[in-house]
Image 1 (tube, rainbow, N blue to C red):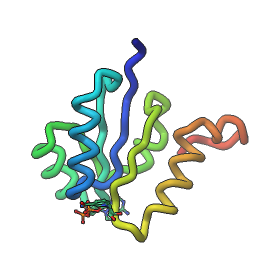
Image 2: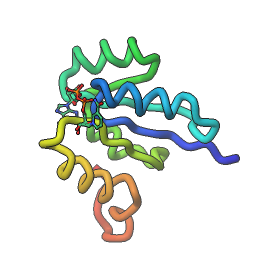
Image 3: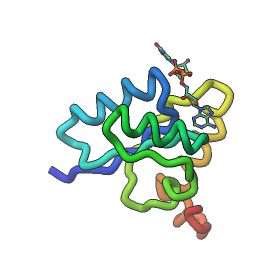
Image 4: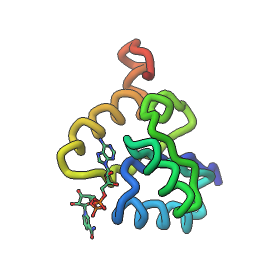
Length: 100
Ligand SMILES: NC(=O)c1ccc[n+]([C@@H]2O[C@H](COP(=O)([O-])OP(=O)(O)OC[C@H]3O[C@@H](n4cnc5c(N)ncnc54)[C@H](O)[C@@H]3O)[C@@H](O)[C@H]2O)c1
């Protein structure tokens, strides 16, 4: 089975649930988390046992990520979804755009 790299955007309550689901999945090779605040990213990453960053561009520029889970506050769902679709799901290449 080809295992994939997964990103979880937002590491609050629901983010923890998404991370746990990914950790329990036999299809997932690794998980990277995102929180916009650097200190919170570090803290939540440690608590959840994953790498986490405040650098969204590094996530959206990573061609190994094949699945993005959005668990952030409601206000940013649309922005994160559009950015993820464009840069992570390969539309960037199709449109001839840089990934990040
Ligand atoms: N908690 C639940 O039981 C539950 C159930 C169903 C759906 N949801 C949905 O899940 C989403 C998150 O809810 P929650 O309960 O985990 O809230 P939460 O406040 O615990 O977590 C939200 C996280 O998003 C982060 N965040 C803020 N701005 C961000 C940005 N620009 N990019 C990425 N992350 C950002 C916050 O720092 C926070 O850690 C909401 O849309 C909510 O409606 C929650």
